[in-house]
Length: 309
Image 1 (cartoon, rainbow, N blue to C red):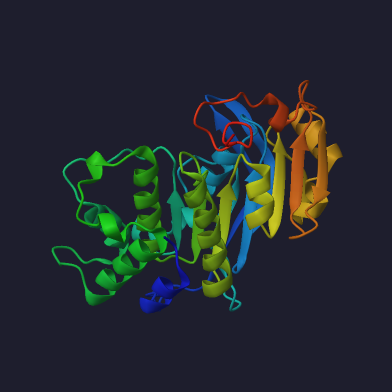
Image 2: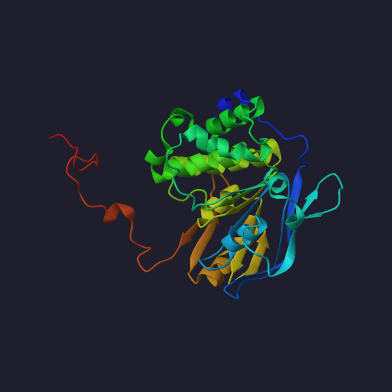
């Protein structure tokens, strides 16, 4: 479980040579097989802020995130890293792989379950950019791995074979490896997929911890609009490879914008208790109540089935 006490019990290790960076995409044009899929999009990920990319399948959000991580070729435009302390922007393409990996990490949903390795060994992959050839893990490496396992809730399975884990457990282990990498920029591609409800919310809480407690610049792709409104400072709504709207979640996630992009009617309101947005898609059976639709189940705790005569 991601508890505040466990986070504070383990020191977060920061590479003193790595500035707190801004990651920028300038007028990016991206292609698949010669066909443009992202059309001149500019995006800035700032320290201490979470930027969520949302949109329907095929809108280009994951491709854009991968381009920022140097994992998708840029047809036109450029990706740069700029430090907050006034240093000039650096072209990401000119940084060597080790230097870039000390500043930017990507959590990808397509990573397989490693065979023949324990969970702690997989989490330690995140420390590879800091290790010298033929050297073992340093005290800082061990501290970073312990911290990452604590905050992602995988410490109890540290010695388990990673190949025996469920899909959701593997997801959390790879997320821990990203945390252990200890970068100023964290990119997350649908990190809540395949997770139980508890770990979905705790993953979003972890993102906010990285932003608010450690000043990390976060870029996150999400399908769930409620999750996006919960976690993001800035929200980018994409449609057909272009930015349809960008800004604060309350300004972007309007019924009109969502209807135009997703081609469905929705109702949007603020939760009176929390102030967060609640988005209710209107389908053909939306008027059907949960209470009237639920069938009677023998042995359930409903009022009807548990009455004692």
